[in-house]
Length: 344
Image (tube, rainbow, N blue to C red; front, side, top):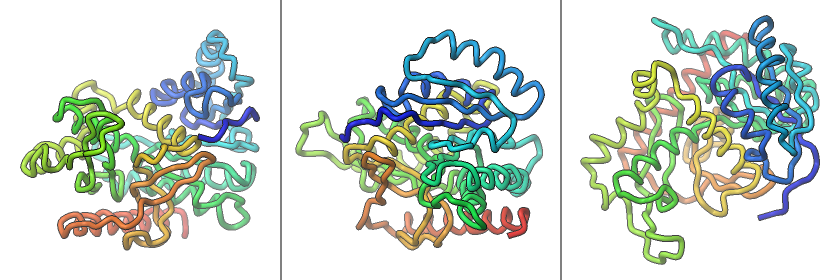
């Protein structure tokens, strides 16, 4: 792994006063995001009024009281241009939540306006080499809107440096497989999520293997170990519906696990995966027949310096191929709804 930078990195977190933001900030400041040798300045963006005031009082005090050696400065603001000014890494967590009776199309329209504004600010004032991870849902389409306004019409960002998070879905899948096989999650390799972060996502175990230990030269196919019926009847419904199950169980959406996934997503993107697969929604250039220009989840490997590569040469069976076509068609449909809302 390449040596880590000692250069200060400006990290912007939107929706920083929310539950996910709160779970993120202390881990970023401790070095878990960009490594133990990279000092950071936190730029915390929240809505004006009570949200940003809460950041400026309680959260700022707690961050200060932790005495993190890597944390060099904290800025709390409700001004997107101040938050993104020369930022190097941005985690876009803040998004309009889905309210009671709200349809997904309504959610897409509401968030399109938010991410248009943030994308515009990123394109105008962030570092030209800024790397953006969209966490707020609907993440794939929010990433697309961010990209269109950050990377065109004078925007300086690169659409390939904007990503959306399917790492939580990935982690959920790995965890379920590890529980079934009664092993640690590191024994599960080559699992992935294809497509959209929605019920149409495609958790894929067709290439997944189980290793008893790191030096195991005879990995076993997971699909044979757990059985087709378990995959269809137990595994797929649990992974696809896990977010709803968490809400039902705790009365609120995933926060700590979502923050953990965001940390893992950026950490691996920045520092590399050592050849292991992870799942990221990236700017599609037509890989595996995905529509060009949407943000679609693929299996990727990462190398240090914010480099990712889609795993090449995989074969899909007819069922997976059909499911992939369905989830990518949904991405196109969501794109059209959001684009109409922001005049594209």
